[in-house]
Image 1 (cartoon, rainbow, N blue to C red):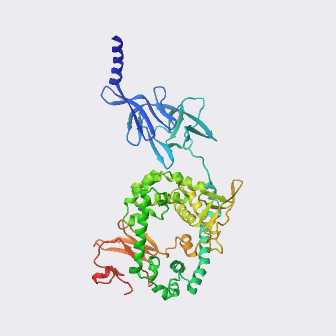
Image 2 (cartoon, one colour; image 1 turned 90 degrees about the vertical axis):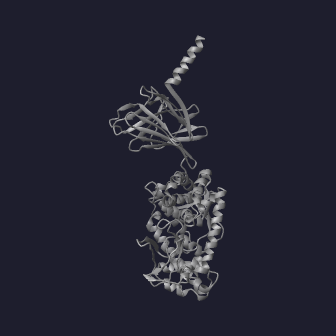
Image 3 (cartoon, rainbow, N blue to C red; image 1 turned 180 degrees about the vertical axis):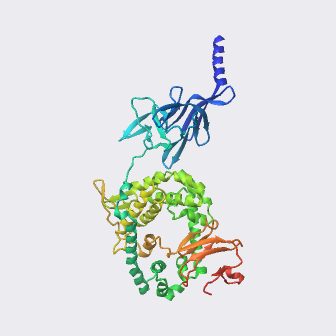
Length: 561
């Protein structure tokens, strides 16, 4: 009976004095405790542990967090508060410093974000941890990589220096760089992007030179097609766009046969130049219907090909399909991103950038995927001397995909200093592929990467198919605003407003009297046929300050009438 009383007394003291708890946040397993002081205020009880991926961050009476002064003197910190929510676990200390652990996944990267708020008295914090029983350190050069099961992890930067003479290891976080990641370690493969920065073919000057050389080479081909009468709508559209670019727009319009202008086979593509909007616009409506149906099906199936759709985010916003923006995040989070093709990975980078513009509140979830997308693309790059190509499936070089990827990377490289090398990579992809064009204008549909002794030695043409010049033109001259395109006005006006145009630019301004002004930049005196979609009801239109078509039916009008 006395034995039972003693045991009961021990348990009573434990549960009266403090409360132990454990919690799992993502892959982070937390064990801690707290008790109430004389004033009833909760205070932490040591030990405190937070474990994941083979490491156990812990504090106990003998192993505190250390803070370092500018003179490198170590000071022990005392834990004053423990807190957690659905996404993170935090420790606060008596000097005002704070450390938070936030687990998460970025594509196929598992990570613990360790963020420190270091008191102004110190320059760094040192957090203790032990390896779990199944973990071990496997050095990769100077980097201590930790194996846990079949996976390997590492701390970013120089935060961790392994000391194999000590059971307790430490990770140091500098006040000047307060965030460290403990994350999946994947060996770096592929091209060293930093080297590309110094390649002359990766410069903006070389990019423009290649573009101009292509434009000069294709124009005679377009003229020959116009003269021979062997026309199709893409050829006529590309011809007019190029002539407009060099200041010969009216000459191009006059050269197009009247029979083609009056033809019933034309679609929305050439309508900004050749009119018949009311009839030809039905083809755009039909195309939109088909594309939205396809996208809906791909989202439902978690099909990665949905990321290949050009300018997906503005397209969905402009078409009133913003519900699919959440599906983008859902699909990206649900699938194995390591299986992305280079084009799909680049498409996700484009989506990520556009989401920052059109729906910033959704962008953070996609920013976490950038590292995986970068790795997929980098491992697909093939460098042969001073040229660069991107392969799909290890050997195939698809010309269409290459130009799409190149333009996306050129834009991605402007995001920050960290992404800047990608702009050079995109430029070099563009100039390398265009350098393979026959007579500067004719390009095969695909090439193959020839490998000898494990190294790429050449890119012979795969098959005898050539890209039609009229299909190649908008890929190479993608910055030529004379080529008809969709221009989103959703940010300036409201979601769902967009234009189909060949104008250099369209701007919007609202006036105090409730009227709105769309300013369209196009050569004055030249014909330009514009479609504005999604605009609200109106009672009057003015062009150059003069009322236009006061007939109530003018909302659908023929501007040549």
